[in-house]
Length: 497
Image 1 (cartoon, rainbow, N blue to C red):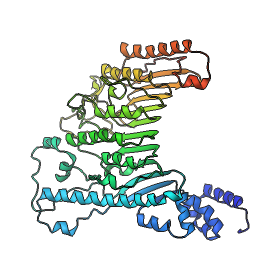
Image 2: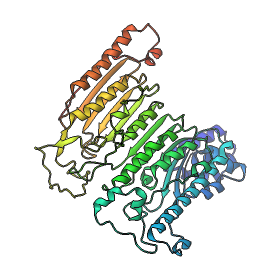
Image 3: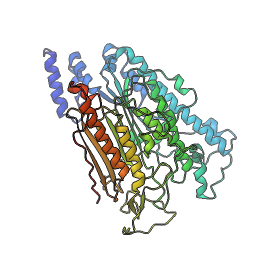
Image 4: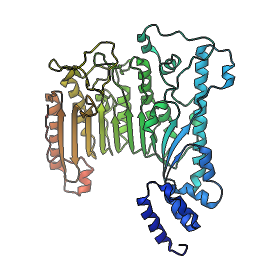
């Protein structure tokens, strides 16, 4: 075995890897010889899951063979462990409940920052041993609902009316045991973290995305100057009446998008459960005092420097595509723009679905009932699309496509009544840059009829492309693809059911 050529050792290990249930089953091969250890560990350490940073440090420090593991790693799936116990020193202080919960949240924040700092300092120490990018999958292990447990001298007053929860921000909601603790960076924490040029991709673990304050994650990405792909899931459940907390969460994302590194190529953002209390209620109003949809505007500015953007479950408006007052946007490199599972509301929280008089549900609607949108009742009596409001979005998208010379696919998809039903309304635009052809398909389950403004906007786009094609001098196919490639076909298909 020791005399086998290194190439043959690689072939054997590769064949065993294809049959193995996990790379860990290859561990015995590392004991054959140093040559087998090197070849095997290059596969075993390619993707690793980390719980304890100190253990990772120990396994990648010391002799040459241990240090070589740093260069093998391509993906780290990190499940950071945070201690949620209450320190004795805090329990012994004579604090009112409000001061106690504030102090406890500060302690939790500090613990999470210390763990984050340990991991990033370790990765920083590796930079001299690596010449390839590293992906980080971040998760925070711990109780899913870390809430105030009543400690402290005295109790906070209970909410006399559930409607009072609407005015509470997230930190106040945690004091009242209404909202879970979310880890967040404190003032000055970001400046204390090292710059990690080795990290080129980052994703917030979907299963544990309800443990972080989203704005803190966005801020943290600034320390990865070579980041090319970022995937952020915002998954914590906020009680539907905590309107200020929901609004604060969304505004925090809008305010921190500018922290994303300049070389970012692909951005994915998912927001889960951004629905109203029931079909009888409107959703949270996200418009600012000046009447602007700040998150849609921030995402539009970001998208103008990306190649791919995917939004899922994010409530957006026409501001995502076309500004009301700002300069005309231009998307030089954008190839894919996907907006999936949009909640069916306008930016001010109004439903985009009217009640359908012919629609029946098994259980009656009551005004105070917390609605389970995933059950068979779906959207209740709502089912008729507000075509005029949807047209505003589709017209803005048509304007934007004219400014996207490299665009290959644009998808706008409204959330269906349940995950089994699929989208209730979809606009799909696909363009083949090599052939110079494109197609537009609009589907609806709620009787949406494209208005004259929508038809005119997309047909104007077709004529504009065709005119440009006729006026262009002959040039290479690659040059055509980069200079507003024309339509050869464009059609609008209404598939109402």
